[in-house]
Image (cartoon, rainbow, N blue to C red):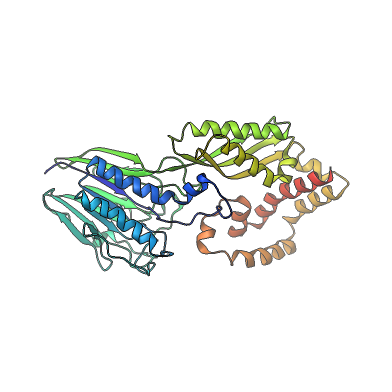
Length: 423
């Protein structure tokens, strides 16, 4: 066998719409909007620089149907760059860019080879003695195990299986094209190039079973470095596998303790310190961060009453670090008042009455039924993809139908709002 190198990437989600950017301006926000394109551009540049022999995309190039042809034109342009350097591309479509999901299409350069949807097929690179086996999704919801129908390994070749799969629902992802690790190991291939799970991981060696993760983090649940796997093979053995960062925006969640904060200004200072420290760990990328304020603090009520200002102050502090250095997506207030709920319930005013009502509500079946009726109507109006992406504890409790938990979540918020207005 010969020696060769290849990039394995997945889950590009090109031109994926990003929530929370409406009405925001500035270079940092513009960078976040175009991050998936810039990440793909970087991957292609690295493939050319590293002089890889081929490139694999294991599904979800796109994030659903194109809004217009510009998405496809951008991808075609990037593939054209690879064609000029003689680098072939092998790709399949996953649940987000399944055949049934994409209504607009463009012809791609002839260096791009797409696995079909009807059955698994094989592409052979005779000079390298490599065989790539894969199958694209025909529709979004593929519920059967595709692996048994993948062909037997080609004798004398380095066999690569390309598959978009939930692999048993890893990481909370939908379990599309479900299969077990044993299915992959027993197939007899040398390398499984997987896609769908957005966290990079090498799940097995000999054979290698690899998720490269997504190319660019798109929100606060996709933190840390993101990129593609660069694989070096010598005489049929994988001698090196590294994750090469391709992201241009680095997401982070920054917990900020306010345990002994006495003034609103203390909060601003601590947020600034946290963002500044995180910038040094972003490897020169734009830092996109979510601030989580936590701990018992004397300024809890003031924070609840000043959420809009709090976010503006945090963003102003980030802008003060320089252009395209940091951007604050959200400030989550998870602090608690210094006075606990039991003490509030003893008050002889509207605040105490509300606290007592909330404490009793979880045992009131009639009230819970009314809450369920009201909330469930609103939840049903949420798009499926929004329900699956919720990370707010109050909304999650509503979507999950945990109405007792919902009451527990909103209780401190309502009490704090009243306390801030009434004291």
